[in-house]
View 1: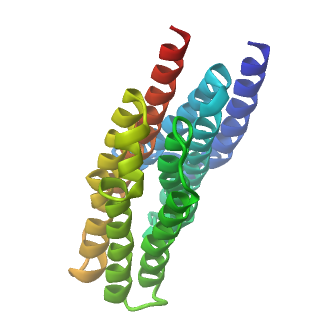
View 2 (view 1 turned 180 degrees about the vertical axis):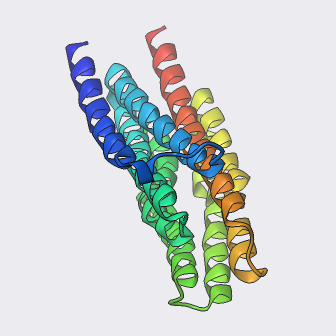
Length: 258
């Protein structure tokens, strides 16, 4: 318990310091009616809270599930810091370029996708090929997208290559080796978690290519709307994703102790 309290205090202090820096100065205060700013603040605090929750649960559950819970805590930690910065940028400049989001996505998306391997490895014998296919697929999905949005690559080419990377990932988790291992070897809780996670990647992540298409291939769209939608999508796609992992870990541990 003492370790949990110490860890929680350290994380809260770190995030509090970042929040104070982000909110210092009259020009950096949220204005009434700034719903984009509200959404940045909401996701920043939610990610901060999720980081603490997953770290504490990792220490409580421990064992074979600790890596999975630590990784999703790291995902939320990176996202929280990123969104504090993006919130500061929005209230001081009125801008939030999508390319800056790739700083977050290039770190957190591969970590999230590797969770498919980690939760299976916690309950079954899994080949390293699953890890590398999912990891490489995430880079193929993200890097061309960033290059297209940043102007280093034709926007259409970047979009097509990124979609191919996403399609490869969807194949792996719906019909590939990862899906087969989950169906054949995983516990009931892990199978349920795997299913919910793959639908987050399938349905929840669809908002990102839609946003790319509207913003870069269909003549552009309202920046405020895009930011609010992306923020709320990240809130769901990261925290809900992590809760599904936590569910599998908690259920598996409870059943083994029962």
